[in-house]
Image (cartoon, rainbow, N blue to C red; front, side, top):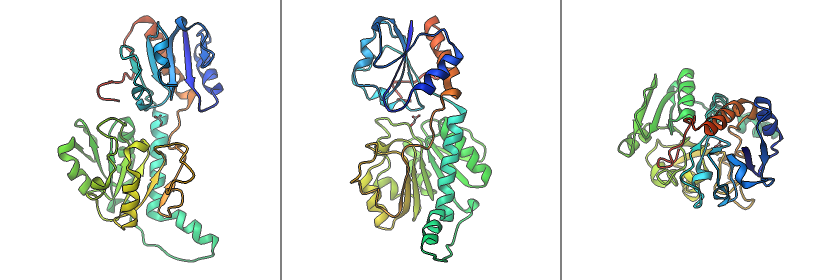
Length: 309
Ligand code: GLV
């Protein structure tokens, strides 16, 4: 029995020590040091090399190393009979909400602009809006979307959400499904995308969507780069329909040097850091799922491969 971590984009020592700390007896391996493939019964993955997950004949469960599972479901060779779980973690939600709230206030109070002005010793006063006069529309009312909605409503923002299925959240009106999408958009001054990436949601941040929100609306994408049609965003900002955007995720990451987003004065870029999984916080749920998988028990945070989240 072994748990294999497959992830090539970061130092994995905090992960191995957090997992070993919870259960020192677990046989932990890190790809590409797989050892005997027949012994791999649980994998913890982030952007694995396509096709490799079918190479483990005794695999019992696949866990995403983050909240998203699009990196798994987009593998055409994914073994579909193996259950997939994802990370659901209050720390991850907290970090995401703090980040988005920071971006919203940076937009409303123009901190970046003042910082630029300071460099040139410019004393220039901007008008601003306060929270009760701003409608924030959140696309995606899963664990992250709901946490953000509750925190924004507590600050005093008018908050609306858009979800696949009905949700009851105090002080937040949640619109449902494609029938209510336009009504959701029509109220929105700041649009935040926190959707899972699925066949239905890819390219959803497009010209048509942008044309239905309030004039001079601001876009925040902290979900996936493939939700956004890049050229449509630039066209709508340059055409003065949108006031700008903050983007943390991109179709290609790192964002290529020649991408027009880099030099756009109304687009704020961060390198996919809105919320990062803290190994210490999530190690207990990974080990719990590992033990459940070994015992043939129901897994926590199971993903529906049909829904894509
Ligand atoms: C990060 O993007 C995640 O899916 O956890």
